[in-house]
Image (cartoon, rainbow, N blue to C red):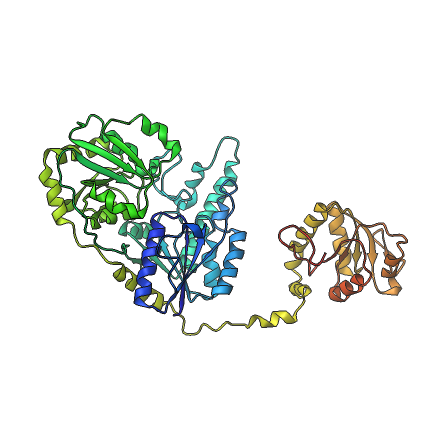
Length: 549
């Protein structure tokens, strides 16, 4: 194994940190391993410590605006597919490890798999079974499950929308994602037992899923512990958004004595959420705004305990590990993968969304400071990145094929012409006609000369008439046919094209197995009209222009 490609977004929150740590660990295990990062976003946002590694390269590609994104583009995004194919051609990785495909489409996994490149997928959230990623309904209540995709349409249907279309798309999305997971992914990594069990419930075989808990690059950080005294300093660190339950935490602080407890909130605030939080604000709640990873040691050294109040089933929030490795206990919601990281002897759990239960825990801590000290003493030793990397590296090696030689050397393609793609005739021709008609309409062509008066030419003449165009003439090199009339359309000699006599058409459409010779014949005439070959036509850059025109 010489190279591995990691696919993920920038910025990507916890996913970005996970891939960063994994890359560092893999590089220590195999210094010769080349790690290529295919990112959705800007290189300027690369995490510190990745961009300067000698064996790490970065590529990026853009994606369509979220204003245009559809449920079906979660499955297939043609622009991203083209960029990904170019990436694979250039890098030629031995394995591709996917982490997040929300903006580029799940079909990228199939592209790698169909090239016989082993594929690994780490499930960081619920995106493969939930288009909204967090298993929260439109009204922010907890979703029971996708029910084969039939439950998903309610999150996207609006008054006036065609609900049947959205239902069809959401069910198709679910089925497509399931096929990708079953047939195109070679190994799935779950970062919590919650996610492992959830995917098994959705029909993924147990043997296909490996449970590997994430780790941070520095397993332990020795910080100057705050000398605990009143007030108790409680921290929230992460995205300040509704699904993270910050409103639950703030509600728990209502009526708490200012001299006994303070809440310090670190993270970027979703402005849509701002008015709801403003109604819960109190004198002992402080917002500190966005932070960088370099700020974490100072932040944790100022806190006594961290609260993770998520109201969605968080899979494996890295902030829990961040806090524990800094020696700070964590109180968390009893939901998703959170309980797997918090035990009674070094933290506490409460019912997700239950601010009263959370408040009781906080009041107990203010009344019994010894509990907090006991929690701090009992924080366990965390897993290391090197251990994580060794497990994943072992998966990589187990998937390596014994023979990676391509089945067909692609060099032979240079010996063929574009018209040779049409050798199958059907089903090639019907889809060619759709694209060619689109081109004719875009350039205002109505009257068309069909070069080729054989059986296929006659069928196409009838077809274009049905689609609103006018077959104005047949062109044919067989002199015996000149002057004949087929279905009301006269057959003329191509020589007349140079005289302009009787020319009553705006484009020439070649419908003949002799297409390559006819194209050359017409090009020598330097005609000032579009010339389209049925077999060789290929839209260029999406603008519908015929190659060479």
